[in-house]
Picture 1 (cartoon, rainbow, N blue to C red):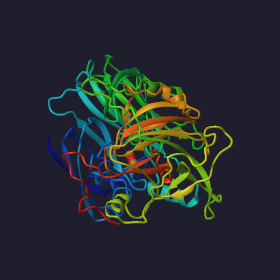
Picture 2: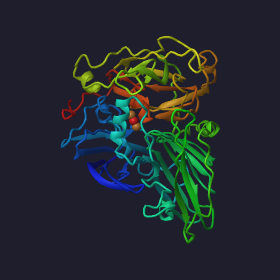
Picture 3: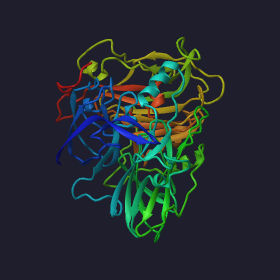
Picture 4: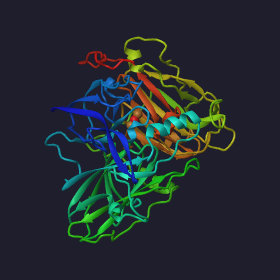
Length: 541
Ligand code: C2O
């Protein structure tokens, strides 16, 4: 293992997209930001220097942060922000994971432009459990607003109305196609946007990342199937599919074989959105170009699934199984110390200062999370009282017909509540989607752990019959999963990591509205480890 040093300078940079220029916050002058490379077992010492006028924190999404919770990054959960002119050193060791993850700003909506890839290679000398690709390529999806993104969300929060949807999706920072800025019509130079060059017969490992702010996405390459080999930095049983479904915060490694002799094949992404709340049907395109092809226009197009293509999401998700080999066993907890049931959804609360006299609120078990003004991890380790309470309910306060149209339980309470776990407790959480306002698919992300996705279904979870169908043998292990619209998903994890760990919807609009909570895992001692304490340079509020 090696110690890898990185410096991330957070700076402003002018960027032109969709015929308009605006300053954006980026790392090291790049959008998307630099790729963080490491190997399994390496230690990363990464200094973030804040040169902009916004508070900033950076989250290493999917890195387990075993016993280094202060390096996780969510603002006011594990640290106070790095203020303008200040810096903070994130210091963590990558333990028991290899593959693709992402890093992103974890404060307000800065992650729209402050994000990049994390590539964790296997330990030296350890091969991939699939044929070695000839080349590797990082592909990051994002969203672009012509307006300043911080203004978009601030206006939405003040008005109580949903924020404007983005003006385009992006592939590695490129929208496409988009209008020619100097005349009418489509600029086919920009039509190409992102382009991937391949040679016949070679195999490519695509490290696909969804860094979009509010959209689950479909991804397709005309004329090619993809072999999925890994998600969220865990290996899966390989399977071949033509459409990838990927939620914000998720990562997918796919093998692409350049099986044609020649041609230019369209690469495209489009949103999955089966809710009626905000319809966003923008696509972004790129080109897969075979060496020696000179055609100007794509020679092969593709059809993307419709917005509400739930069957396409299902066939992707149901194909995901842990590799569960001798070398990479799936260590699913077979017993549980805590069996929890969390409703997740968006409702409406009165708001006298809002445009319509009401505002949207996100909640879990009818609690809408209020961000504290002191970091919870700081409060926990330095015994500062009054920052949070540890009474987050393990079940909904009043059971109701969660997915039906009536009756609904729209009442939400505000609170900064954690659910407390002892070190090494085993936990099962059934995440129940609700139809508070409108049924919607929610990508739920857990910090600090991978979990096993042991079951999912439509309608209300049946505590008697559904557990009989749980997969405790080879369920996929990951850090973010889509809870189906008007349905449920069950996860299990072992609380083997002391600290304060955020659980939230990775649609940023829902997180902002309060669809989040945190687990607090008390300190525990492994035989050879000392009790942990945050470093002395942890930013304070
Ligand atoms: Cu990728 Cu809490 O986030």
